[in-house]
Image 1 (tube, rainbow, N blue to C red):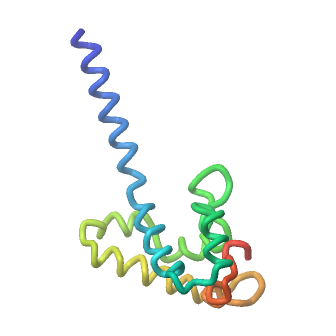
Image 2: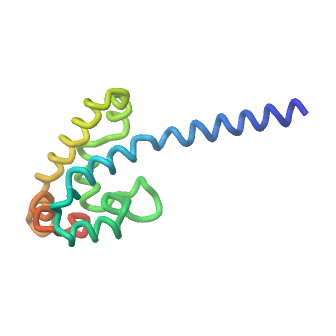
Length: 127
């Protein structure tokens, strides 16, 4: 009986470790939506983002795979850097917003910046 209890406790501990490793992702999504999807955002962008969900930055079957826009964002926002400051809400928000603004300046394959595409109501992850 002791072995069963210990095994269950160890399993719960491992599960808890696995759940905490993804904790940086929701704040990135939250700040992206707050910045780019206010009430005044173009309906086309809202619809595209609602359909894309995580695929605003990601693609494929693994969350480690990024689309073209996600690769630009990833240059400026890393989980490791975020983990170092996530205890301070003001610093973490500032880090995310500044990273998104830097990614806006990156050029898409079509020559326009991602920021220009977003302002036009176009999905930057579509290139």
